[in-house]
Image (cartoon, rainbow, N blue to C red; front, top):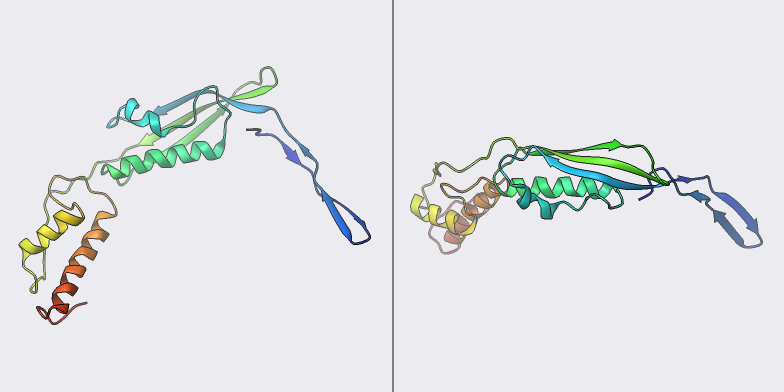
Length: 178
């Protein structure tokens, strides 16, 4: 990736029915990753996170690739119950050598706490007994005691309960459905 390239203003040239626009582009020196590190991971091992990181030493540097690495790590943590995880990137520019620029990059993880479902309770249910609701939640959305809490699970659980209630209404087993 060339971090310090330039693109000049377009130069229009017209003749007869043709308009030609020319951009003059000057590429800067290639920017290479000198060192890449992931820090702040206390709950996940470096071996678990390594496949998620594309930015490595010796490779051309790309801001977008580094950003995608941060998003992959964040998603990995969220799937494991760390809903408040934040991953930030730091880029330190180094002295140019042999026509290339070098950077040291670091992905910094602030894990937050891991959320685990302690228990599942139902309130306000009269049309469906609690055990039927519990079985529906456990089977489809994995909302059960001891499971890591993932942000999307509550939404799925709500839809499972509503689908079950609507199915009961269709079969004439209940009368009111939200």
